[in-house]
Image (cartoon, rainbow, N blue to C red; front, side):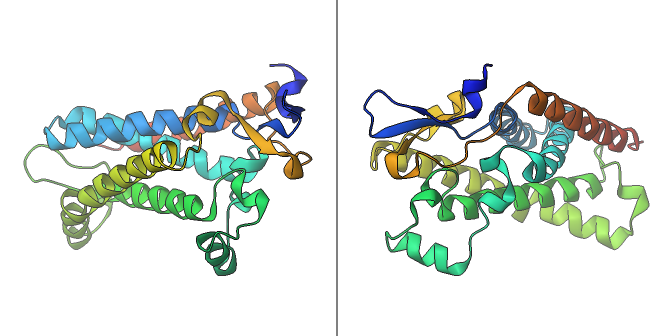
Length: 236
């Protein structure tokens, strides 16, 4: 990837600029998490528990990585870029959002991102402590009380599972709405990393997406995968 990948460059029309918004690590995280979560839902519904555990560990590694990348990743992948106050949310819902709020995650989109990450983290955590008392028990069950195991199991198999399915469905419906009704290109930028930005925002800082940042992401993910593997090794 050349240096042009980390800077805005004019589009042919002259009225907008193509800017690197989503760095490669963020894009890979997004699609890997989507695949892992869908697989986790499918294996959970079909009682394919060994694969369910494996995919759960993969989601754990991805969530740990996203937590770290939210502080050191590209400009628009950092949590600081999409933590909005009530005023920004109200202005967005009234159609008065600031132009830069439409570059990365919108205020409403940011709320969705945090909700999905939080519920997935809770679902993974309860899965690590869950025990169906038949053949599948999480690696942390022997380290917590029986009462906590019971609470975690009940949440993971009932409320948590359906909330995850609901959020995933809502996310897909929201993407379809924005693509088909509002004509906003949401999928392509998450594939290419680039987004057309209006002329008034042409000078906005793009996300860093060079070789050094990608190597950093690889090292961080390797560490997170190592933590997930260590957690999996605690299962007896």
